[in-house]
Length: 184
Image 1 (spheres, rainbow, N blue to C red):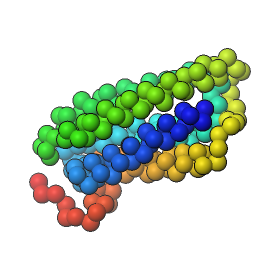
Image 2: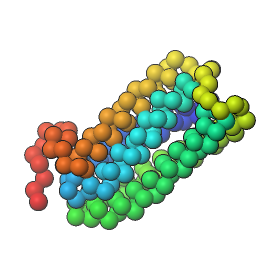
Image 3: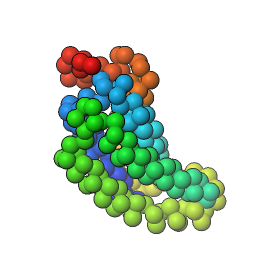
């Protein structure tokens, strides 16, 4: 499980870069919330899923029928991501579209996510054979647990910002870098 979690942390770091560099610095998505509200809502929902993964997997095993719930949560994340690819291509057109380097990062993230799932799947299969309930996750180092908690809190904060910005909460639409609001 340690390997799966380290790969998930790599995914989290790539996601943090995507958010801070592309979503905040380059595209200023929360500041353009009127134009990209659909994308921001998808980000918020996906961030909630990632928050659950980051904050539960280092500490808990999803046993029995809960293993199926975990698979459902992961399937939901994949569906959200596919919809996000389609939504951002349309919604971002008025603000310059999705850049090629951001698309490249998304491709790398998809590959990393595949590696994560390949390492997680045997664990989930083993958990599915146990009585239903949460168990204690053993064998995960303190640095990995701490990193996952840090990333989990970060992704939840980011998701809350995107959610609020999408629904018109003005202070959550402010530019993180102190730039003036976009015109139009």
